[in-house]
Image 1 (cartoon, rainbow, N blue to C red):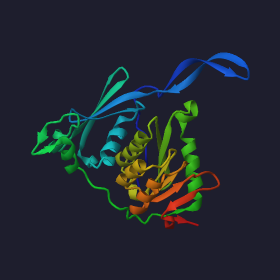
Image 2 (cartoon, rainbow, N blue to C red):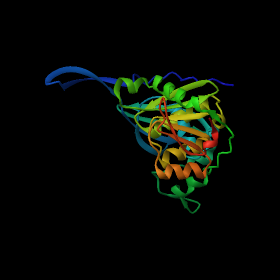
Image 3 (cartoon, one colour):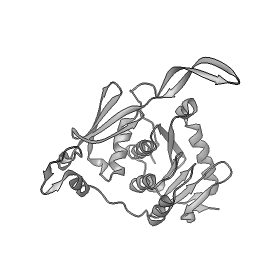
Image 4 (cartoon, rainbow, N blue to C red):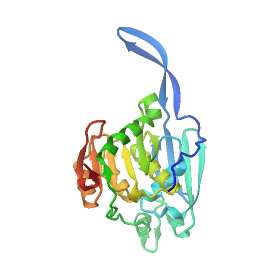
Length: 267
């Protein structure tokens, strides 16, 4: 089976050094500190604006592929991803093989065959499907993956400013970081797809809260098990249960909670 590799990132370091004043134990100290970099990102499809958000300026190929998957598009349509930088703004253009997607562009309000672009884009998307994977994991793997996520939290340990998401598949583990939890999920899903790792037999591990929007991305990615270090919301639990996802929260070295489909964890 394929291994996961983190592609080389040519967008520079993920952290900056700044001068600060620290008040510590009744002392004023001038020193330097490391802070995580933040960029404005504009994602385009075939040169037309699709989405704007803030993200860490790294691994745009993973990010673009993950957005395609979690938004319901077929990532096999991606021909190439080009990145243009202007100061703190990065334009990520996704060129597709299917020219029907040339019409996608949510910032343009003209109509196509009686549909506005917001309606039209929905006709191009794949609907979420219930997870049918029979994958199960031993209980001890949960704490092992918590440790692996911590071991790969490089930027977080330097700055405290990132979310970390990892993918585990048959003893192989890789993780990505981002200031945005949604972008971190997208990058991890893109990492899995581009490395040929089947999501149906993989576990996704997240440092962030598990909300409805996060679980929806995981469902679109096709992962049967999600392990979270933080808390889930009620909407996340309902959605995970409806789509047959095993949702684990508050995972740590010695304990964890299983909120849905506990049959995938072997005790």
